[in-house]
Image 1 (tube, rainbow, N blue to C red):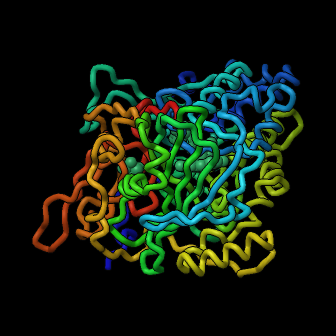
Image 2: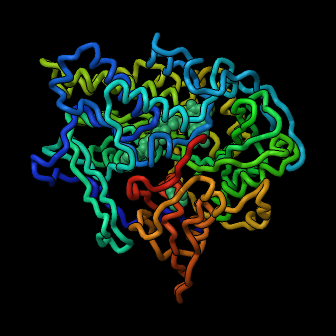
Image 3: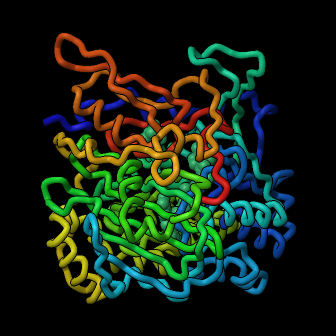
Length: 563
Ligand SMILES: Cc1cc2nc3c(=O)[nH]c(=O)nc-3n(C[C@H](O)[C@H](O)[C@H](O)COP(=O)(O)OP(=O)(O)OC[C@H]3O[C@@H](n4cnc5c(N)ncnc54)[C@H](O)[C@@H]3O)c2cc1C
Ligand code: SF4
């Protein structure tokens, strides 16, 4: 059977690395340039503001714009989507005395939890395994938290530039010197429209990439500076919905089992989360490892199926869906981290480099902590008498000494063991958890998601028909993401357009936003892949499964507010 990796996309890292091209007096100069207004990037900007406040003389050396944050979404938060049950350690360190947890825009601390193993009709409660215990954690909407953090970053002196995609990495004499932003106002063929605006060179003393999952320039930087780790990165795809409900949910819920299949043959790893958001909202999501093999698997439709389970239907009864979204989660863990987290002029943070604790489904506190540590290293690099290279490499040391490193080391093979099937994987994962990572399973190899050979079943025949109340089709889901992307933009999805039918079917089923359709068949049995790129919600799944997502025009994509 085909493997998507046999049909690589027309994409070359070289096209996204450039010298600055704008004349010197037209370049926008900033002190520290942060790419991505997620928890990592905003924590970095906030910490830089705090440090500059303590040492105002340095601000002068950083120029008119000491700190700038680029964000491709319509506004900070527009592209943020998470659970989000947050471990408060990193927020407490970032804000110190300035804010208490109860001052932040949250839905309060977790009051209780349940874990169920589902079959089609039943739900067997089991004691929450240690990684799923959430006592002491707080429930947030990451999109709302992002807006709050952006306000704090601006108050601390950062300039936030929304609707601005970082398109190319500017490298001069082997050192990262900033980024080039994408053009705006081009038509499908690349021609200039009346409102055309060329991108700009933003040059900086230090560039921090905090792009999150499937970060475009992070991937470019890992290749350009040969930073990739020993093991390849792998991902999960999560699709989630926020519901207004009639009855408050009093605890966080996780489920395992149905609607995923447990047989090793399918390689289906994942589970669901259902979190309370105050008195009248809940969020429900399904997470599935992208190393699955069945080309008919659709996480969007499995989430629709999950909602028909009697246990879950009851939670949503009388309610209404208010938002929908999708995003990938890096899940290779410790063994897939890059060899180094810095390069000349550059620091890498958060999900972009895979700082996620898979069994705990948590990465926000690692993103915030890595952003804070990156700010301290960038600040050190700007001090008189410091050698920038040594100062930037101190970021790696700081991450290795932090809870990010020890936590991820403890669960280092957690994702890989599930390649052995649900039951064997579950047993190995329990052994690792109980021993706090001391059980040596040897380094387990991760196989890239796109290298899994495909099989095709009729799984899609069982997906529930959309009723517009409990279950929905993909296009109404895209509408519920707030996506209003212009239809005639240049195509930002790089995929091989002529592929075997099962590869085209894989992409069509996988994409939660109905971007791909199986087109015309040729005499040699291959089919054309038809694309509707403006539906894309930039979840990143295509990069894991054989294509490549690049950032579209700034301001496009979903406009999440409560995800
Ligand atoms: C469904 C789901 C549930 C989760 N549940 C939890 C949970 O309960 N608790 C938890 O702790 N973690 C959870 N996580 C993981 C957590 O959300 C991430 O670890 C965290 O958001 C990573 O933060 P980040 O700042 O690195 O990246 P992100 O949050 O992805 O932010 C990156 C930002 O950078 C912007 N950006 C990217 N590229 C560019 C570019 N080239 N130019 C300009 N802007 C760019 C993006 O638009 C985005 O705003 C979950 C993730 C998912 C998907
Ligand atoms: S086209 Fe966009 S929404 Fe669809 S899988 Fe790719 S990144 Fe996700």
